[in-house]
Length: 609
Ligand code: AGP
Image (tube, rainbow, N blue to C red; front, top):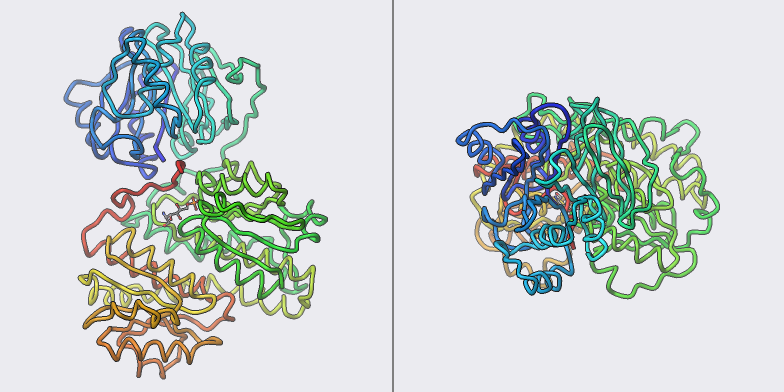
């Protein structure tokens, strides 16, 4: 996923573009670049690495004063991380500059066509092909050239285009990748997400697929790629600036870990009526008929969202008695899934822009499934594709490593399972008991967070080890997977999660002297079995770190280090057990000197397949 920001209006835009890029840098940070029309001439500056490198280059050549421009921060898909491959890309004929988030799938055929027309390419990117195509099709009207080019393209795109020959016109378009147009007073700010817009205006319109918008300081026109006029929907951006500021924390990931008590209170607010034993989910209220028909649930997601979906699988079978299966969306969509009548698909996604998850959702819908979303970003592509859904309401998540969104996803899936359970076999009393326990989760997480220093100390002991195991059973098998993913994606330590029972079927061969093995060993149905698995590791020289239930003294005979979490009914325990794992990953990355919020090779949301 890449970061896009553009401006057309009545004031010099270079600083606004750079500030916007910095707010979007979590989306991708391999390289950055900007283009401004300065005194009628197109000026393009690019730099490998962070936005600050681009800023240094701009300072060296002197600031631009142009009032129309655009900027881009890249997560590489086609072509290496080089200046030449950085965006903006230009054509070789009419002075087009273009920035792009997505993939042009038929770029090779288009490139051949353009090379036969005599165009000479400089980069290895698909984006340059689109810039060159627009230049080739330009006949004095940039909007029409962009529409004509996009009619030839297959793939996903969010693009901004300017042209030297039309120094007051910005044309933007999208399909499959997000793009928002902020509407100011005689000025417009276009960006990949609201975080780059909200400090300038809260009036905005989110483009739909195949929308093209021609923007000048005098106004804008929205149409389709076939030039059919479109009436845009102007909305109020709800994002608050302080939500996207660090607020005294060292990193966004740290802030978001510590925000979980608050974010979960926001997630639960108005939805849990423990007294009456019922869950109120506004997003499902109009779909009682479809929900009563649900006989099977498929959950599709990637990464951390998949781990939450896997916990959802346990919740739906355990609490609602509905057969459920969670799997990689990328696998689901290609395995020719059987979707019987009464099947619901639940797409779980923080960003709502993950291409694999969106594709999995489409596949299930085409086969007749009732589509639900468990999403954080309001109005995102996946949210708009579902029949109904429940937003996390945990606030914007900036850290690339997902934390509060994970606990928010598990919380929402828990509420949906209770909601469906009460429409089947669950008694009001059982629901009251679980909702009362659910209500205690934020306060219990606060208690865990007070152990941050102790968790850091345990991490310090082992963060020089290059191989870790994470093991859990039942509801906390997916939690173990999540702990492993957190550690590997920000500390670059190799970590593997698995069901605790699976270890003796092969992975136990990995255990050697000093190898850390994290066990989720809270009180539950399989506690004794987990103790046996811990002994298997200790017998071979492994060092065991146990996440255990408060007041459990017995575990100290088995584990070298114990991180305690408050007692809670087992179905709700992942929201607690994950917190020490999040903090261990965070501290390991800081101790090892890595960039916690922008880990190498990663991006916040993967909008390409
Ligand atoms: C989580 O820490 C990772 N950054 C990544 O696995 C992420 O969860 C995955 O890409 C799914 O993103 P989504 O929730 O926005 O769909």
